[in-house]
Image 1 (tube, rainbow over the protein chains, first blue to last red):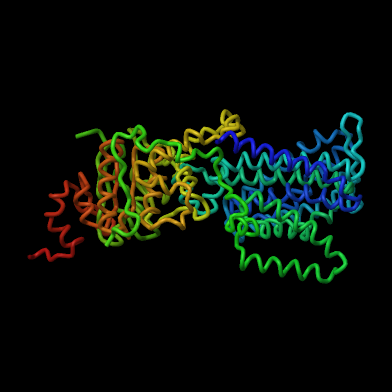
Image 2: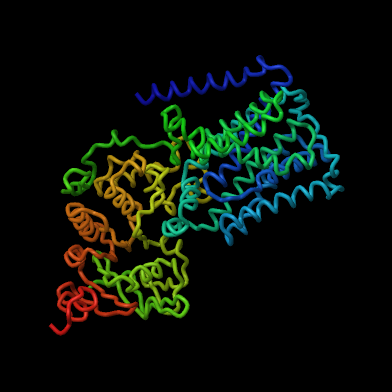
Length: 346
Length: 258
């Protein structure tokens, strides 16, 4: 029985991947660019969701993390001519290191002050991008050469898609493996109550630092993918509006949900393009959607779909043991103590 | 008398000018239930918080298994085997019972550290053995049918038992329960009583029990310490304590001159 389920899962997975690989057959140059942006924003959405959704840290430095990743990639590939398979991991690692430093204020300050500190950090980074002209080329930005794989240049959006899609799927897989373990559970318990976390042997400071580093890793990789997608890294790309898009992805898609990051990225990337003819409406709808979701779907679209049974519940544990497979009278010396479940109390 | 596992000697906690706990000493022994009673504001919960490392102590010493742990932060104390429950149920509403209980196994997770990275990315998942431990403890508490439910679907009593499960799943040597019977029915308190006895007898756990339900404390405890106004009043077996005139006046509200 289990084997047939796993075969079904494998077939479904293969079909989904085949479908994703076939996407460029259906797109033109422009729609392919939008699809590419979706893959980038999935990674960025996961990054912010780790900190904001899972670990509950009101940290608003994700656009800055993205910028650091994008600039790292742009500099390494244009100045040193390094290939993408060095640039993308390097962007992730550099950003993760800077991100873990951002955890220092999180250990001292809570919620609103952390939001202010990280927001100040984000603005500072934009200032650095603009004014550190020797490295970032100021407001003129840095153009990023098309990535190449052993001489095969991935020029054009359709070819680039075959770099972005595997990267995005790999990051989703990585996030799922890391979060569905003691790591994800420690994030959530730190979000819910630091006192309970400490009384369960969890080092709250270290957990926050891991959350910041991990979040920045995804932000940095997302920034690297963004750099290849747009081909030109400009300081104003990583300002307040960028941050608002990331927050909207997490809030609309669903806090503390990987499916939420995917749904949010899909919506927030495609809808503005669909509504491009109604520029003035765009921002109104944006705001209205956020307010509606905040009121009616506190856990975002993914949360609502989970409640309706469309999406499976995302558990922070993998390979769950089915309780039915366990014989009832297993190696316990005494019968269990039944707990009254209503009814017999009166 | 068995060797004690947790020794608290002349522990003092001050909040500004207020002395919340004034040079209180007590000892917990493996396999014994130690009741801690006193009227509201007696400093029971503060003493609890000081022993678990949540509030800093002004003076005194805490030692565990012969080792001075006075300087240990809260997470280190729980890591080495001192676990507690909370007066108000503190479970994560968005997680299932299984995940909530697994949080209690954080320090033992097979996925931890550099060696755990393989388990983290392996196909089985890092929590295989841990889930077995959760199932065992859930069966022990009679809540195995709730493992895949959300917290909101549980009765209040079940939530209480899930919290106890999280506290004991790591098999701590010291278990501290802060008013576990509050809000439970008579029948449920009786189950709690049996559970505490089994924990002490079968797991050899040392239990510190703060409780207002006197019928439970006096029946289940092997020894009782009474606090009043942050000060130690008396320590002894339940019979001695119940007969003491100071306890009657301070806690049971009876007239000393009777």
